[in-house]
Image 1 (cartoon, one colour):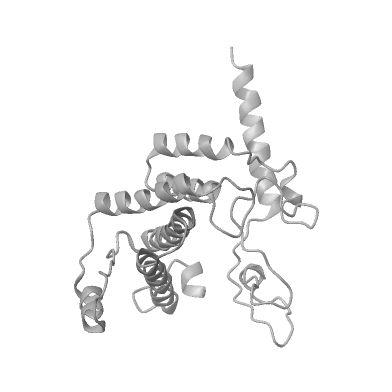
Image 2 (cartoon, helix red, strand yellow):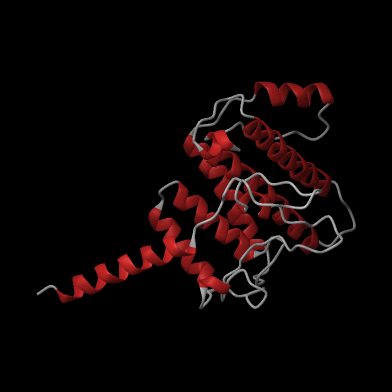
Length: 243
C-alpha cells in the first residue's frame, strides 16, 4: 500500500492487477445472469425485469470502478452459445471503446436499473436510489455537471438526507440513517465482513495476531475537517459583511 499512498506506482503494482481481474469477474457473472435470464420460461416478466436491472447495476458498478482506475476499458459482451475459445478470443481482441461510447454504455445500464427497481431506502442491494446515486457520482467524475445536479435532485427526492451530526454518522446511534444510500452490512459470524478498518489503522497500530493492518490511512482527521469548516464559515461571514 505504501507506493499507492505515495502516488508512486506502475503497471506492476499488484493492487491494480487484482482490481482489474476481480472487477471483470463480477462483470462476467453479471453477463452470465443476463444470458441465463433470456432463456428462462414460466417466470413472471416483472421478476425477470428486476433480475436484469440488478445484474445491469452490478455490471455498471464494475465498469464505474474500472473507469476510475484505467479510463475506458474493453466492454465485454458474450453472445449466447459462445464456445470457450470464442469467449477467450473476445476477451483478448475487444478494443478499448471511446470515452463517449463508454459513458453511454454505463449510463444506459444505470438508467435501466433506476427505471426498473423499487425506490427503497438504505440498502445492501441495488434499488432505484442506489442506481441514481452511482449515476450521480459517474456524472461528477466525468464533469457532466448539469446531469449530476439533476440526478442528485432525483436522489434527494427519494427521501435521502444528510445526517445531523457527522461525528456520529458511523456510530451505533447512526446506523441505517437517511444519509446512507448503498452500504455493505457487516454481520458477525458470516462472510459479510468489513475490510475498512485495516486500511484506516495507523501503520504501527497494535492489532490482534489474526488481523491484518495495511496502514493505508484512508481517513480524514476530525480536527482537519473542523479547521476547514471554520475557514469556510469565516469566509462566508466576511463575504456577507462586504458593502
